Image 1 (cartoon, rainbow, N blue to C red):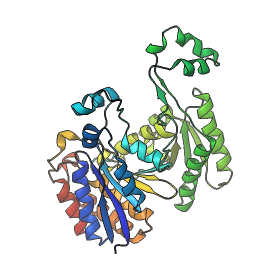
Image 2 (image 1 turned 120 degrees about the vertical axis):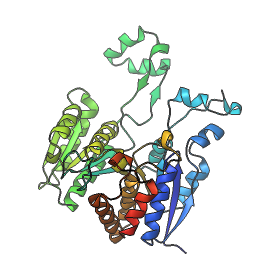
Image 3 (image 1 turned 180 degrees about the horizontal axis):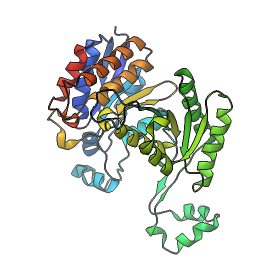
Image 4 (image 1 turned 180 degrees about the vertical axis):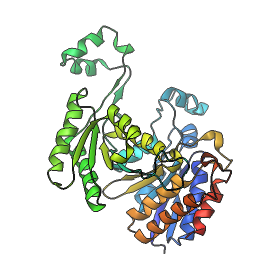
Amino acid sequence: MAQYKIAWLPGDGVGNEVMEAAKIVLDALKFDAEYIHGDIGWEFWCNEGDPLPQRTIEVLHNTDCALFGAITSKPKEEAAKELIPELQDKGYVYFSPIVRLRQEFNLHTNLRPCKAYPGNPLNYKEGIDLVIFRENTEGMYGGVEFHPIPQHVFDALCTHPKMKKFGEKGLENLALSTRIMSRQGCENIVRQAFEYAKKHNRKSVTVVDKPNVIRETGGLMIRTAREVAKDYPDIPLWETNIDAQCMWLVKNPLDYDVLVAENMFGDILSDLAAQLVGGLGFACAGNIGDNYAVFEPTHGSAPKYYGQYKVNPIAMLLTTRLMLDWLNEFDMANRLENAIATVIAEGKVRTYDMGGSNTTLEMAEAVASKL
């Protein structure tokens, strides 16, 4: 019997190809696992009205963690048009399966390292080594939205005087997306950031929000961060606004170390930071809960490249390293990262985004050869 059971979720488009790349390096590492396929993605939305079927949820419940490739997502109106005729006008509403996984399994912590490996021609500056902690289940991506706004919801909101002017426009013309944050959620993600900084001897933690404008939710995040910081007197807490932080990351990326933010702001920060170290071809992520985790590269399904084995698999390979680290396979994780760093530094094998012409699988095989 294998030591681990891994839910294998290729998803859509190039997700299938980068997952092939991950399998090459896992086999080279002699990782002792049974890989259990799970159906997820656009095909299942179009044909079943559910991009994350219940049978896949059951796979996850019976595995140690999941490795996930990429997903295709579209706005709900466009998604509804792509349903098969038998499912049209049956009330099906598209909801992102990765967001649903985060909420279904309470994967509250999104960990996104962004490191500039020496020799990468796409690095903005050598020495960048950022780690972003993004709250993963609340905030703007919590999914509590309305269009049009029901009368009873509007009436409840009208206890706030600034709401009344919107009623003049007609409720059918209004859309509402909420930003709901809890003290517990804020405390958990900030504490995760500080614990990581403590364990890895990081120099600072920066909490990023917009409390001067989004006063209640932003204020809650900042107040909670200050309270948590008292338990870590040796690690400075910096506070920045999201707009200014984006500017400063471009201007002075070496000044920052561990950053922590709510869901949407963390998403924005992590994509910006990814570009500083080479783009989404180098961007990995772990969706981590108390008892389960789903690991994914942060690039999309890139339909225009599907079938060409063209995209850079390093994001997927770094994601695989995160999975190994979470499973306490520290030696394998370190060996894999060192192999990736060696291939980048040598510069002999490069995918199109790095100025080369090697394929997805050739990059994976180059990394595997260093193991």
